[in-house]
Amino acid sequence: MEKKPFKALLNKQVVTKEGKKIGIVKDITFEVRTGELIQIVLKDLTTYTSNLSLERTREREALIPYNSVIAVGDFIVVSEEDLL
Image (cartoon, rainbow, N blue to C red; front, side, top):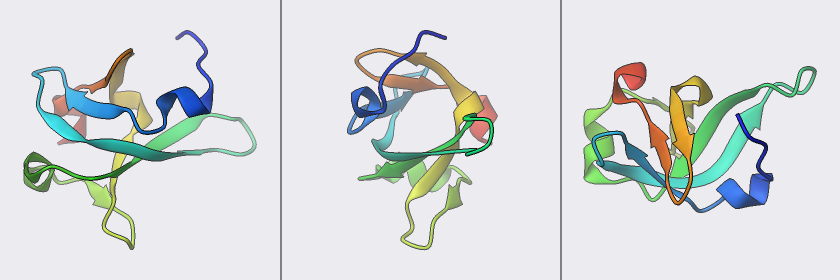
């Protein structure tokens, strides 16, 4: 995958490959030792997001596993099958 600075991902809309909006990127968690990206932390969740059984933070923000990301462009596209 092409390298992108962290700031380029912040505040991007996250959508499923079917085009359903999930939320906005608030943060990204990663493994400090390896630098491997673990999860995307989402804010401004849509009502559609409540139908998904996503892990949540204490602040009720949704966590999306980074391995579900298919593409990063104007939006971050995730595979809904990987979220279930």
